[in-house]
Image (spheres, rainbow, N blue to C red):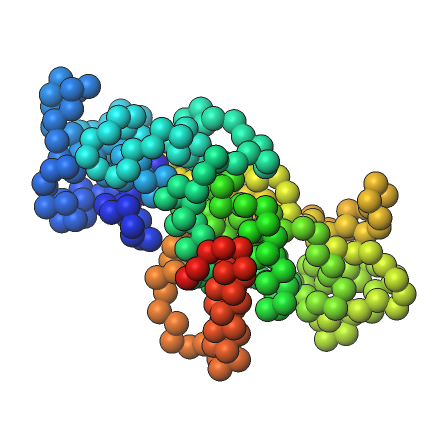
Length: 300
């Protein structure tokens, strides 16, 4: 992994760099401690930003043969740093040979990771909706956002084996059921061009209308993770289909890539130039998130 954090409860992660690491840790334990695995040599440790387990920093001081950048890897025993949890480690997206799972795979109970996923979904719901809207090119109304959030809770997506502390924005669309595109505003020109090929549609001022009954909906599938040069990205397939079940035809399909660092930056971004309309929408979205969470037994 190419990013770490120093506290389990922080939403920000950091690049692995010697000066930054020394300043953040002040070269103190438990970030610096001797390791029996390295013949009692002093090693450097931090916390995985995805699963809160301890990680060891490799190459912070010693030059590596295969890369010029230091990186981190999970440390599979408790060391007094982070929160060692074997189950969360086994399913962490950064883990080599990650334990296999399906969309139906769930944890047996709500642990601290699941609690934090719910917290982020509620407290940053406005930002999550904004990010998804930019990704898919469809305006997400407060009504649609509420519908998708109910799907998230109904599916108990916070217990999904593929859920982590950083991929919360991906969970909202992935566990959403098929939603109609009729009556929605489309913001992406490529998508509009694809929809214009459907004779039953009437598109004016970017709003999708139909001149007769048509079943046309969008959905998300195929959650994938990818690590390249120690950097993690995740993806979904965004698809629009026309027709009834078993007879539906794919009209449009696009791979949506989620760089988890983007969401982190959005969380920490100071909003200075939002329009009054957007400010009001954001407030409504945050209120909706708390109401929906309450209906599902979570109080914030």
